Amino acid sequence: MTKILVTGAAGFIGSNLVKMIYRRYENPVVVGIDNMNNYYDVALKEERLRDLQDLPDFHFIKGNIADKALIDKLFAEYQPEIVVNLAAQAGVRYSITNPDAYIEANLIGFYNILEACRHSYEQYEGGVKHLVYASSSSVYGSNKKVPYSTDDKVDNPVSLYAATKKSNELMAHAYSKLYNIPSTGLRFFTVYGPCGRPDMAYFGFTNKLVKGEKIQIFNFGHCKRDFTYVDDIVEGVIRVMQKAPAKALGEDGLPIPPYAVYNIGNNQPENLLDFVTILQEELIRAGVLPADYDFEAHKELVPMQPGDVPVTFADTSALERDFGFKPSTSLRSGLRAFAEWYKSYYK
Image (cartoon, rainbow, N blue to C red):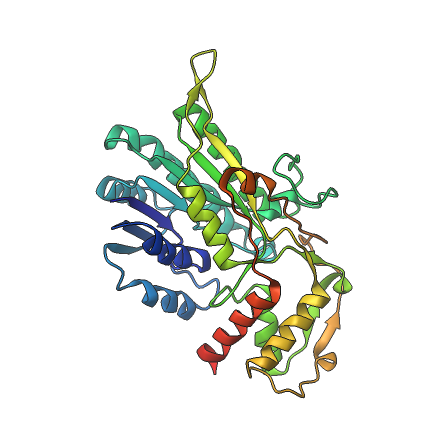
């Protein structure tokens, strides 16, 4: 029996991860926590939770990881062996208008998780064997070198969101060094798929096209994104969960931090205009939009937005080397699955 805590369990990645855990582990006990905030349509989070409610030994707590007393109580009661921290305030543009949300969830919330992991070794046998947490491709900022490697220097974030994610990596490293907590950070690259986040381009574009509104394509269509299908992300998380960085002592007798960071991306950036073309083809195929839909009349090329970057491109060689895995779902396959889900959910 494995006890696993998943924060952000009603989120896009979190809910898919919980389902995958039950497919891969024998008799797991999974504790999910999510504050169910209204950053986007709460009905989508409730829909994801409905898929989880009948799983055996799945315990859901509605709460905020920034609530230290709640997190401490949760660790004391459930004694998790693996912690996957996916709870965070997401979104680059929202961080410009609502910075408080990022400090609370991404910094204070993550600090509470680290502290609970630290004290787990005193509280129950074995304590936390592995902390896995979500970082982001946003930490690379306007890095000119591509593909992005985890060996690259990432000290120049271009949004508060990116700064909080880089801070998570720094905090985790410090706690790994001080308290020998095995931790792995995962830099996710533009995750998409069915029942995803409406603030993401593919979902937002679809909503606007259905309403007959114009979609804005930033940087005049010259942006490239390493779109990663959610099943590939979850497969990567599952594999990483099962293999914590090894503990070891240095010559000074102190822990060498059992710490690692990996990219999880498709290793194949797609031009935004090509992406929009595939999306429109799949929306027509699924019957979300009529075959004669006039896309040209609904497209507007606009300048770059503050906090955005022109390209994201993941070097996944370390993930392949250590876990024998590389995301491989094609953009068309992923957008087809999204379009079919959208049709069934909204139509």
